[in-house]
Image 1 (spheres, rainbow, N blue to C red):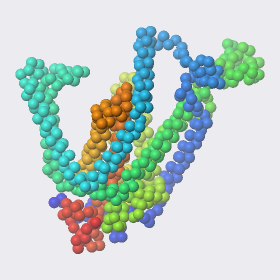
Image 2: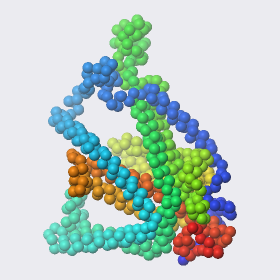
Image 3: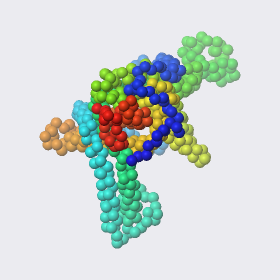
Length: 603
């Protein structure tokens, strides 16, 4: 039996005072992190201002149509170059030899032809692609529902299959190793071969298969030992997975919440992309006064219109002066701070995208916590749990969501800056600077992963207790640290299960689409479209199926994480007495060898 700690608060501090009336997410709560909420609102107003400013200055036609060095459109109606649709690059022969130019021109031509064929395939198969995505959605829904009844069996079968597959891998490596014995050249070592581009050569020597066999044996032994020593915690993980399936069955609307998250993220991405395009195309041609003799107006900005320039004092005081094109950019205050606007656009994109993700996490967490803390299910589950949880999040915790999102956005923007510096230093010879930059990139990558993990659990505590972000993050962190082994086992088991579920859905849909689009299914052979590249719709369906499955299983993963934190809270908050009964289901009570007084159990 797992050793219990009678008073965990004695070492870690009491994360909250015991409340005998606690029955789940607190409804009587107040607004949290108000200052951060105000800051977020002001930042959004500034973001809208930057967007309006960019839209008034930019011209996205510059991305679509070619322009000369003065910013004039080639071949467009109303442009001075209306009759010149083709853009000519001056002295292009200085950049490459004629042979290289000929080779490159052929490759453009070929790429354009391939792109046209791909476009034709999409026009022929788009309705079948949509049907494949609908099938992927139905398969994902069926899989999630089946987990409610077959989760335990599926986990143990998949664990057994992993052990079996690795065992077969060991057997296969040994057979390959034995078959190469006595063959000339098979006793050459990998060190003697060196680094080769043809990897099939390595498969023809014994040492390669011996190395594979040793690695697989180590992995097999480690997995078996983990299964032996962590068998009880695996049972807890499986019980929680079953309970998560049951929770989703009672809160079916949670499966459709990712559609709202997807819509909001699409809006954020679209606003960022459009603003970025307008900002990058808001440059304008700059003209300067040019004169062969000394002139006080030299290098001053001027208007190239002949009538305007000739009527100015410049031609009077500087005879022979001309208003010539200098560069393409701009000298206004707006153009001087253009790079800052781009930086602000990117930073607010990260902040808003993280906020949308956080809103989805705290909404789902509140709904699933309502399920766990309902003693009689489904009678005690509040009506419309998703809608109520979303309302509480927006009304009381916008500041807390903005706070967690801000921390994550700062780390992400630092990672972008480090990537930019890395690109700039690629040609540098300073190895010390490169090493330091690589270390910083690795550290901030790890920091981003940790913050995402901490934020996710902090939002669960916010959804349950209604406290501010810092307090919720601290409570979640210490609660997880007190149960670190359970956290590690459950996290890996559920991740593995959900990953296999995604692979199963993608595999089913991908195989069906392969047989359909290649005409191998006789019953629907006539209906299959005639394509240039059959992999185009197949790859599209496979990627779409993965994204759909990821959307469904992200709800499942959030449910498991929420129930797990509630389970840990239940263990520390209650003791099974009549006044403090456990809320966990009967199967968890039996695994932990605990019970409620009077035989009370959660339905």
